[in-house]
Length: 593
Image (cartoon, rainbow, N blue to C red; front, side, top):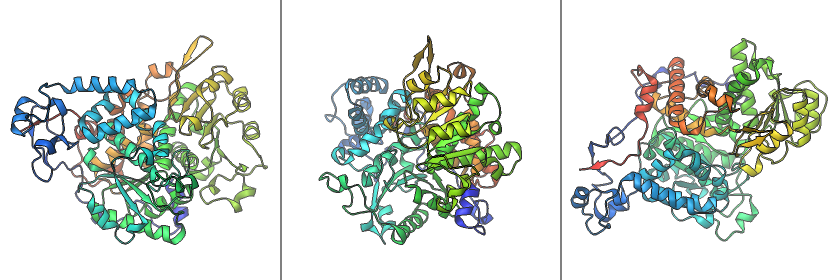
């Protein structure tokens, strides 16, 4: 992937390893008041600007415990009369909230209930999410977050992050200083132009950074106070939103070109000035034409990561490495066909080629020849090279023109079919039957989100392949019974990768992201798939173990950062897995002085 970024930057441009040694000083996880290291028995002080007490304490989500405040705490912090007399445990609160959430019929209602809880009682929100991750992940993130973004203007009640619009041009640093937290370690930023498979949602794309950062904390253990969701409002080209009386963003068409580039540059410079060298900036749901350019432009000067390009690639590579244990062979012995040649498709393809090159010691250009991509105009071939966008050109191989996916499947005869098109029902019965006709166990990954945009459903994949497909999707699907056997579809969810990856970057004090760190994340995830998982046809481990998985990913990523000379935390911890676990935020209530 770094090779692709260098092509975009220009041949003489630096890479992420070309930096001054003076930049690699200090760093690591900071915990100003010790709350995260305190056990339940140790006392902490509920600091805000001053010591929080009384009504203000109940309205502070970081410290509010509701009915779980003890008798002594109620006396000390002037809570008498502000709460009913009952004192309950956090576990009882959790059972009650889960009971209430399950009463809602619509996923969006559950999403709104969870957001209300996050705004009122932060620790209880994360305890619910951690303890019930498989049930609540589809609520706080895909697919429900897609509907939430579409209706964000209607359901908006309180801001959950920073909104930086064109009105703030020239004053972005001042806007960043308005955020109450100073020690920020992870920023997720979007301009809302390509939200999931739903298109341009403008300012209402804020649901994505909020959801992603909730997972950074719940799954990766990054402190909530160290996370900052940001939406850059540069307008929207969505006419429906521009005419919606409830739309919360700028009512103008998107700016492009130099004006857009200058606005982004001011933002990136302001972030670095305000939060320092080691804040991880995750670009999220930018359109293809901007996503690659931003990653190429800032990859050597900032600690940046694009989850749509790099996170998706890492989680898919992990699934493929695991799938090889079911179907046999090495990465280089398989042939890959993608439907979709945007951020996700080309990002996945590049990381597969990179790993293939590393394993076989073959030049990456040769490895790319095993990978074919289909876009809206058909198979990407050399005769189309002049008209292709720069990020598609490495995948233009010698072949006659092929106009559609079915013909491409029959011509290329892939062993692996990967969908990143953002268009539902494009893996038709003819396509699945075709790939199944020359593969005993075809690997089929329908990765587009949300569920409605998946290239095919789990039931279709197993039925049309006669139960032989090794199948995974981007959004969750229920198990499918075919010929008396229950097939459990895997979920190639980026949430496997980015929380642990982010923790590894933060805890090592890394100052740049390198492709080898993405490969390290993939390796760690693939190693967590057990024989029991394989027996069910799964190529990903269950989400119920996600914090353990994230700790191993974080440790592997941090180890690679140290090997590359990109880590600034000194000395290097002896046991990186244990260190990762010790850095993880705990949602258990603290006792107050």
